Amino acid sequence: MKRFRFRLQRILDIREQIRDELRQELVRKNQIRDHELSVLEDLEQESLRVMIQEGGTYSASELVMFGDYRLRLKLRIEEQQLKVAAAIKDADEAKERYVEASKEAKALEMLKQKRKAEHDEHSLREEGAQLDEFGIQRAPRPS
Image 1 (tube, helix red, strand yellow):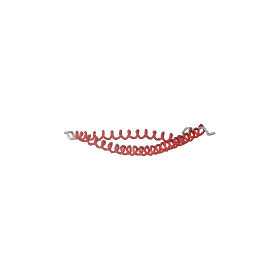
Image 2: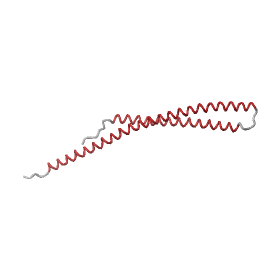
Image 3: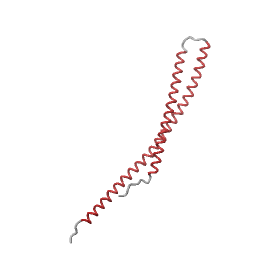
C-alpha cells in the first residue's frame, strides 16, 4: 500500500506558521490595547480625585495650581484617548489578519483531510481487489 503524501504540505506548514505568528501578534496588540486603556482609566480616576479635592477651601495660588494641573491632566487624557483609539485599531487589524490566516490554514487542512480520505478509500479498494485476485488464484481448479 502506497503511503499518503500531501503535495501541499509545505504550503500548509507555512500557512500554519504564519497563523501562529499572527496569533502572537494579536496577543501583543491586545496587551498594548489593554495597557493603554488602563492608563486612560488611571488618568480619568486622577481627574475625578482632583475635582473632588478642588471642592475644599484653598488659597488663590492653590486654586491656580489645581486649575493648571487639571488642564495638563485634561490634555494627557485627550492624548491617551488617541493612543487608545490607535491601539484598538491596531488590535482589530491584527485580529482580521489572524482570522484570515486561520481560514487559509483551515481550508488547506480540510483539503488534506479530504485527500487522505480519498487515498484511504482508494487503498482499501486496491487491497480488496488484490485479495480477490489471490482468492481466485488459490481457488481449486476443476480438472
